[in-house]
Amino acid sequence: MKIVVFNVGGALSSYIEVNGKHIVIDLGNSSDFSPTNDFLLPLFKKRNQPKLEKNPYKNRYKIDQLFLSHPHDDHISDVIHFDKYFYPELLTTPNSNKGNIENDIVN
Image 1 (spheres, one colour):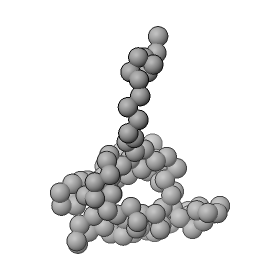
Image 2 (cartoon, rainbow, N blue to C red):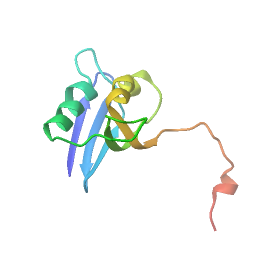
Image 3 (cartoon, helix red, strand yellow):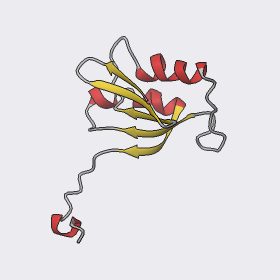
Image 4 (tube, rainbow, N blue to C red):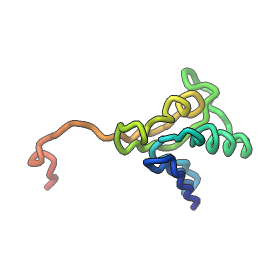
């Protein structure tokens, strides 16, 4: 397992490798550091990671899961760069569905 945590000013971003999976948690950047441009791209290029071949994601690297904890700029400001070079197979984000707790309980 590999865990890398980036201090991007007011927040943190993280990269995790576990059981052959690549996971990114939050994508904030700072004025002098981009998790995408300064870490993920160099890492995937150095390892000769294969790029996806199917459109519309052709020539992007696959990330198994991207977690975005909430939509504040300090947690999502690098998403535009990420989207140019990577494709998250799973994207996990919060939603505003209040739901009905009584219906959410499984017997």
